[in-house]
Image (cartoon, rainbow, N blue to C red; front, side, top):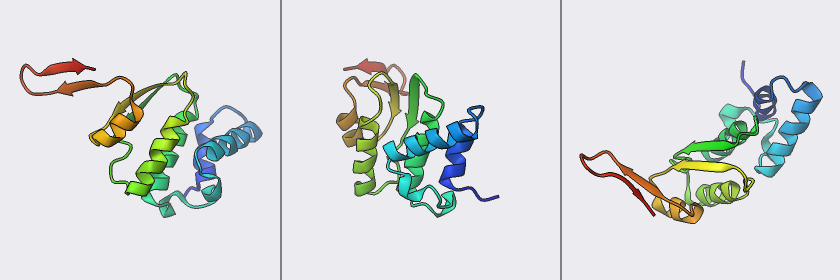
Length: 127
């Protein structure tokens, strides 16, 4: 059965009770600029909005650590700017582990960078 953003977010709040899940879904949608698409089918969202929804779903259980694997991959320059702003707006106590090949995104977001290379002998580099 096709799902709307509202249903996807509410399902991510399992065990919270329906009214609490709907309230939390509306809150996270508001913070992540998804309020205008809550009743849109997920499959009909633009690629950038789908990426925002993925971040919103990852935040639903209130994690202490968030792993984002190439969140800007395939996004337009405008969507990338919105995604960077969205990631910057995350709570400061949230630890973010970012895997990203777009170094402009990395430099915009990160205060500490560890580079890992799979070549023999390359290993880890911190900075």
